Length: 573
Image (cartoon, rainbow, N blue to C red; front, side, top):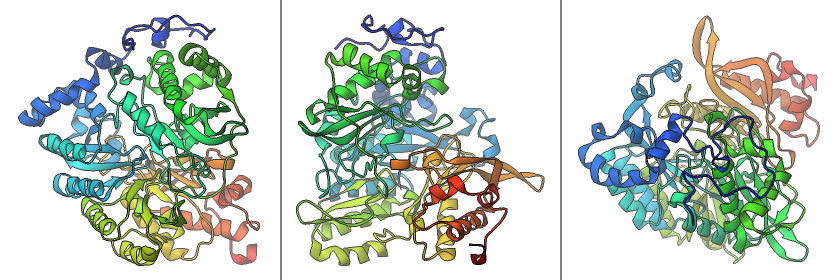
């Protein structure tokens, strides 16, 4: 395979729109770096930093780390410096990043839809307990995320991960970020197709491959053969979604260009049928388009979604087929999008007569010790394995029916409920100001207290209402596609700046996928969050029509009801 990292791609065979000015697109010969990030990647392939960590930095300590590695290439190894203590949200965008750096790291460990054996769960717990001050979070990228990691301990941690068949390689950076795979792949009774072999092949070919280690920015992959579309395919750069061709049978449609942050866009559907054994080739084609044609001048426009939006999906498919695949894809109508839960919480049937159980930690926060307890229960009850979900949940696979109820009781005792409240089930939160250098407000602890209070105020909520809490505009917790999305920012209350949130209401994925409604100049303080959500939910429950969802109600509700300026009484119905 030719090395296309720093040279222009082959001449185009299709009429691709040439930019009016240089956007750093390699395919047009714009190979000179246009910003410091591109210069750093050209100076040295970020994959090379692994050896420096193993043989230099871990032995000489934090002060020996080259700043270009520390704030750049380390990300390809799943490592970010965490936020130093003592900096409030007002300093996030004003203090030089070197001052915000603590001497400890966040580490992300990718699971890529893998089935985690009890031994692997024990390894993950051991790392958190022994090397991360007992931290561990389940993220919405199906990662385990640690904090308080010392550079001196990284080689030992990597050794534990290697033995467990896991890795932090390219868990961050301008790289193929951790894949989202269906948590119930290969076992769900209603699955269309098991995409596990395709994810394994993509990982084998491309993770750690220098030809795919320098994208314009992050590149997020999702794949599912489950009809619930349980990997949020609408908001990933590339998604393979299970479908059925009337002649060829089960395969995958291809969706491209999804993403959130400050310019959210839903993925566009190619309307094709790709067989299981050609998924990796299609992934390579899309990834290569992003590498060669992606915009590299401005980081704010360097995601694949901007290229797809500019080209249009028809042109994108043409380039993919003619320049990268060398064949025409089979057309097939895109599958209908589902309505309802995608998180697999509760007890469900497997194909083999066993059960799988979805369990909910609160806002994804677990610990090393909790993972060790989970591993012990998995071994005691002969559970085949666990998978992480894109909704900060855990699914236990291969449970004998006779032990289900007893296991559920034991899980609940350690804080992992298979029958959580609607609030606990449907609330997510990003890392927040506790550790993240980009965050402006606290999220994890605030969301945990919010869940507890809403459980007290609405103990019998009869309909799901999702609440996604994010510490900054980057939407790591998918703010814009929640019923109630909360984007952290500083707000003014009584003449002082305090932690608060911009509110997005009525967002959704699935059949009615859309971005939440923002009310002009409407913000809520963190301290007032419980009362605000109570008012809005009360208005919904009082004013809704039969079977009307929260998102549908938001679309028609008066603004004073959405702003919480008025709270309806039952007599107002």
